Amino acid sequence: MKLMFLYQPVDDLAAAVAFYRDVLGLDESWREGDTTAAFALPGTEVELMLDVPPGDGPEWKAGGFYAVDSVDTFMAEHPDLKWVGEVLDLPGGRGAAFLDPAGNTIHLLDVTAEQTA
Image (cartoon, rainbow, N blue to C red; front, side, top):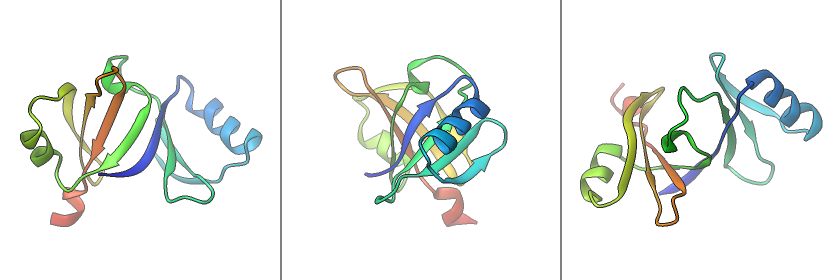
């Protein structure tokens, strides 16, 4: 597992982008439609991902997004984790989320679509 993003759900993407760009001085690195934007975090390969989530369940709470080789394989190898939400098809691959023992959300992302394209 490698930390790729710090996931921060927001209600208003435009306001959040303006804050992180104009007040905190971060550089926007990419955007996905009208609901997701990412910022480079100086001195690290990790990015801050802002997202207007489609729901309010635990799978949409703030937390780290970790890269794994395959979400499906990771889930099969860790059936006892407290998985929340559905496995999602995301740009480039698949995503899933589970809760740690303290109830914090841990997000997973693989890049299987890029590998098979």
